[in-house]
Image (cartoon, rainbow, N blue to C red; front, side, top):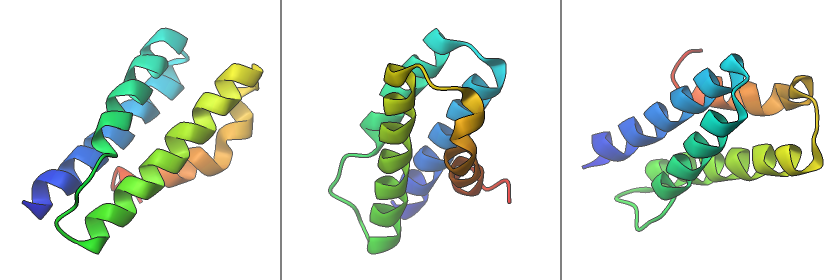
Length: 89
């Protein structure tokens, strides 16, 4: 069961990164919504819960940035965390 939760967070992070890089706001918003669904519990172990909490924090930060009309360059920390969650580091 743990592998499924890990894979879900990994895939969600990867999809958000793709939408960010493409610069497509509608696609990004859609991926943020999909990722939010991955963040719900209960979790089989603390590692899965921590990944979900990190993903949720990143999703929330990106949403705030979108609401404020911020520049994509201000998402450096979020992009680094998504890259880590996606297993690209």
